[in-house]
Image (cartoon, rainbow, N blue to C red; front, side, top):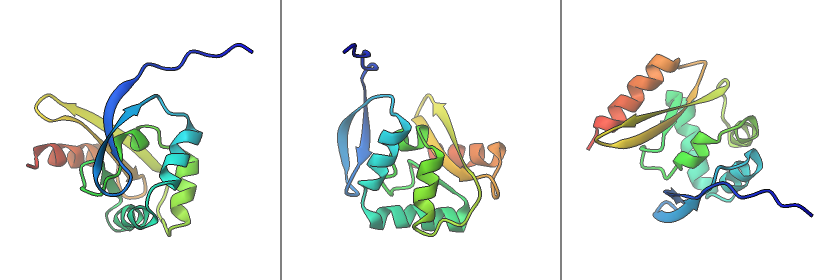
Length: 130
């Protein structure tokens, strides 16, 4: 059997229990992204879903432990999982921006409530926050 080479490793941060823990990231498949989200605390999933329903946007900087790697590799199966927790909005899109004095910030946003410009404004505000 021929094995495909693994993608290069990148270090990053993610949370599983609300605290920050060091992880090694790989470019994730849609299945792996969904698996990790399903293994996350249902209480924290509900917090993110509630924020999406209220504001239409959430980022990896919102102090909920929503990992940037999940946002970067979001897919429709993840949205379907959020719908089981009561997500009522439209299609979810991702957006990220790198800030030289802050690093990368990622957002997941409801396209019924936000467009790319308003998502960029949200990222800018998150990067400016202490």
